[in-house]
Length: 341
Image (cartoon, rainbow, N blue to C red; front, side, top):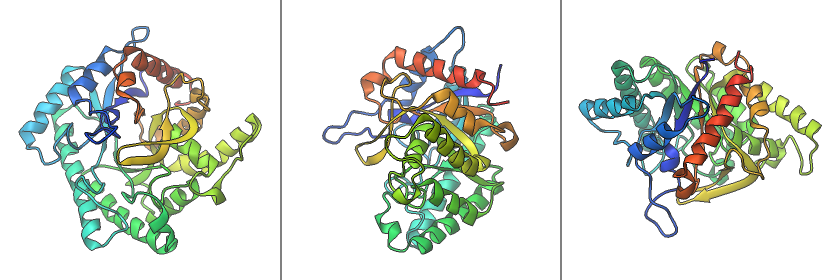
């Protein structure tokens, strides 16, 4: 079976890394490519990569020629590029989607930059599918809670303008469901935001198994919890169906992942869903079964690939070849489960 294509994310080499106290140094793009290219399970290798458009992997203001050189390098490892992550956060190109006019314009500028790079990769031929990922770039929910309705409307307005920019470039945006992003921190708030934007052809949802498990627990929004601690397997899957039935119709990008029910953070990236190794004994998810809930009808929503996300793994884990073979094996099981078709 050749669908979905199996991708590895490059940003685990960056997210939570840095030169601050207690931080590990970033792992460069080419090193991440080499680690990904070395993985193999029963003759199957990764088909491609998903890719964060910021330093030190990529300068979002790089020239066309510099970007073509990066595309050549990626293609040289036999990979396609799939989904791209726009640098929407403060400290990168962007700023809060619910901030003042200047902040929101920075956010939109980050989306424009991502669309430009996407176009260069598309024209090169290294990219044939995938979306551009965004979030509200408002870290934490305290400020949002000061006026939840008005702040959700601000984010929706920004997302609507961003979706128009993407559509003009022939791209689609996917909003990442993660408990740390204001207005997107619970399954219900995420759904409300998507519905308020109301542009399903241009802006959808990016589901990550680790992050959406914390949606289920209501970690940052107890009022939206669908299971309580000590839940049974029957209660879990009934709740999982409730959540996925609501968000699956919006889902246009998908991350295979594992979670142990804890939050985790490193560097500037704090209090988010803890990604675990695919074979972590504390993992709470049957990866293959849970993925099936999200992937039903995926091709009808234009999806052609799935991606692994292992943010904030220690460098020693990322640099261990066994990590990537175990992940690839988990992704093959998802692909071959039949849920895709």
